[in-house]
Image 1 (cartoon, rainbow over the protein chains, first blue to last red):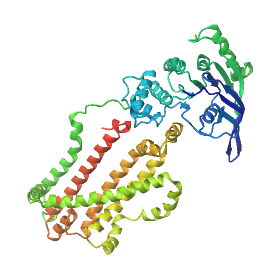
Image 2 (image 1 turned 135 degrees about the horizontal axis):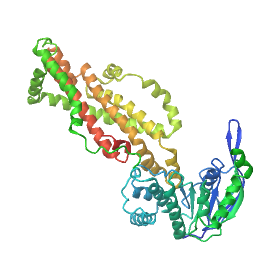
Image 3 (image 1 turned 45 degrees about the horizontal axis):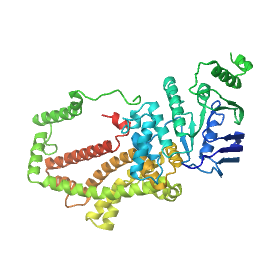
Image 4 (image 1 turned 180 degrees about the vertical axis):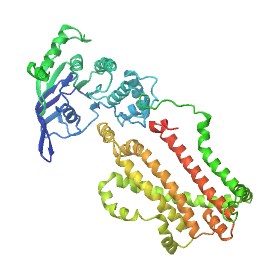
Length: 257
Length: 265
C-alpha cells in the first residue's frame, strides 16, 4: 500500500454559468480529512453536497480554490477514489462478478483478478450471487455490488453519495452497519454525503453541516461516541438534536405549523 | 425482483394455439368459397390446389433452388448493408462532428425508397448478381444505421461516468459499456433491416432476374400458373417469418440480461 494521503480543500468555490447568470453552488468550502477518517456531510437536497463529492471525485472542475489529495491537486477521476451513488449504476449486461471485476485495475492478471473479486464478494456478503444479474437482486444487494466494485481497486478514499437513500429503513440500518465493518477492515478514508441526520451521526467521526446554496460548512460536530453506537442513547440524541437545530430553528418550525 | 412482471412460466396450451386460429379460419373459408365456385381458379386457386403445387415444387426441388438463390443474395447484401450501417452508425453516434459532416448526405439519401434505386443500379451494374446485392445492401443499411446511432447515443451518461471513475480506456469503454448498451436498439434495427432486405430481393428479382423466388413468381404469372405464383408468395412470407424468428432467438440469448426481454414471452 502507498502512504496514506490527506485530503485538503482550500477556499473552494463552484459555480455554473447559466443563461440568466452564474449560479453559485459552493462558496468558500474548507476541509481537511485525515487518512482513515469517516466524515459525514449533511445538508438539504440541492445544497451542493453532491457537487462537492463530484469535485473530490474529479468528475467536474473546481471554479476557484484547490483540492489536494496527498501532494497533487485533483484534476480528474482516479482509482485512488472510489465512488458509490444513490443508484447502484451497475451494468445490467454484467453479472455481479463481472460488475465487480470491471472495477479492477488493468495491470492485474486474470488469476489475481479472480482472487480479488472473490474476496470482495465475500466482503460485502454476496457469496452465492456471483452469477446473478443486477435485475435479479434487491436494492440492498445492488448497492453491495456497487460498493464492492468501488473497493476492488483498493482506493484510499471512498466517496458515498447518499448510497442508502433509496433503500428501505431496515435495509438501510443493516447497510450502515456493514459499511462500518468495511471501513474498519479496509482502513480507508470515507466521505459520506447524506440527508439522514441519524445516519450521519451513526457513522461519522465528524458530522459537517452544510448550509443552503451556496453551500458551505457552517458547523463541524465531532462525534466522540465509541462504536458500535447506540442510536437510542442519550449522548447520541444530544448530538442529533444539535444538528436538527441547525436546520430547524424554533422560529422556522413554528411558522411551518 | 421487484421490476420483473408476475411470473408466467407455463402458458396454457391455448396460448400457443392462438396465433393459428385466424389463418386456419381464412384458409377454410377460402377453400369453401373455391368449392362453391365463388372464386375463379385461374385467378385464385383453392388452398388444396396450392398445397398440391407446393408438394410438386418441393419434389422437383425448383422451389428450394429458387429460394436458396434469393436467400444467398439476401445474406450477402445484408452482410454488406448491415455491416456498413453498423460501422458508419457507430462513427456517427460517437463523433458529433462526423455526424455533422454526414448529416446532409444521409438526410438526402434516406427518404429514397430502395426500389427507386433498382433501375439506376441495373444501368450501372447490369442485371447480374451485383446489382441485386447492392439493392439489398442499400435497403438494409438505413435501419441498421439509424438504430446504431440511436443505440450509441442512448448510452446512459451515468455508466460513462462509472467508466471514467474506474479509469477505463476507450477500447474498454466501447466494448464493455457502449456496445452492450446499444445492442437492444441495434437488434431492432437488424430485424427491420432483414425484413427490408428480404423485400428488396424480391423487388429486384421481379424487375430483372433469371432465377430466384421473385423470378419464379414473375415467370409463373407470365405462363398463367397462379398456383405456382401463390406458392412463391407464401414461401416469401414463411421464410421472412422464419428469419425473424431466428434473429429473435439470437437476440434473446445475447440479451438475456435485459429484463424487458426476459419478461416477454
